[in-house]
Image 1: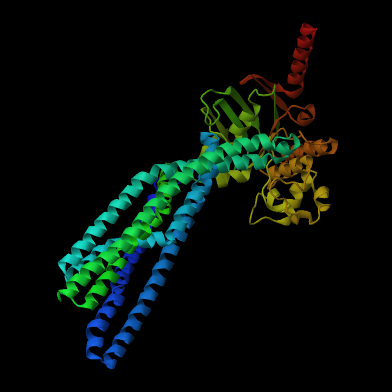
Image 2 (image 1 turned 180 degrees about the vertical axis):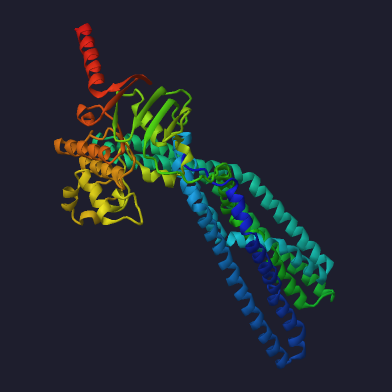
Length: 569
């Protein structure tokens, strides 16, 4: 794994936003006090203006209300912008960590589908911070202020309001208990459905060519049906509690009007107090009702935050001392490899040294562990035992961004990125030069092919690189591997889709790397790929069984094959 992110980075990011959250809390205090403007204005209209018939009093109160509401609107605007900025900062501070974790997790834990999706979790938290659901949480603590004001009007009104508030909190807690597991299950199934859909999209050619769309679609439908069923259960429960909350709030508003009317008839309070109490009661219960209505968002955001803490909290990116660029040798020392997510080694005892200016070929039967060894050399998979060293330093002593400039890698399955041809060749280097891109393309025998494309080096490759043939994609990946003159170039089946011209270009590229003092390691099945190598390693059944000069090893291999053919004949 290339990089471990700072330990507890999620908690640190939240702590860094603590001041901003306190500011939002302070704004919420003032906002909720200003929310009393309407009912108190109503109270003054009923009890002062209508009884005194004083127009100057009405005008003065109206002007005061205009000023207070303007201030209220300004504070609401600022609070919302602050919350949006907190969400943006959350995304900014965790985005790269989430991206690294998401892309590297399969290299450590094996394929895990869509189970771990920190980028989507960051989106969920950021959207929650910009939604009305978060403001309801900041408004809810001030509910006792409203209840206290109602209690000051009369203890009976206060008793009704407090009882109603307690009942709504019970509904909120029940909502949480009844929906949390259902929402978690729905989220998990949604991830599985997305992962399966993406897998089917990546294999669209196979599905269409072999008539598998209906069969695979039935599998997808089974997963989707489970998701929609779980989603329906969660939505039904959330919606049901939301309806109960809304109806009870309306009933409570009418009940407090009835109690207020009774007290007004008894001349204990004024009609204005009755109306004001009803309005304040509505405002007091609004945050709770809003929270229950947005309960799914609340729960999903909390689950996303918890997952982020779990996934990112275990990772850290240690500070590494800058090392000199490797220039002398590569050593593989008693390496044992266990694929991510597996328990059984697929390669044991690999041990050899490659000097600068030479090339090493790795041959052997399919499934013997050759590609596993290639992944170990470039650091794609962690080494279970032993070590891979460049100039004596273990691979993991270099930071990824630092060592990446000195390593070129062409994997067995060529994958290109959505971008231009130049972007892919240059590894999306923001400081690339046209000369370096063209030099790599020429060395890979790609330059003339690129010039025939509609926009040359600016041609958009697109996801899947459909604009290029398989051979062109492989040449482009070769150009990417040798771009920037890396010291170590590892090529896994680099000629599997190449024609005669392509193999000639490959041989020329290998010799060029050797001539400038670099190292080339080639995994090969076809003899054309090892023409320019100096030595060969034979990997069979997960073990290194031979190492020596190319011609000597090839002679041994041919002799063994001849003996096997004779024995079976």
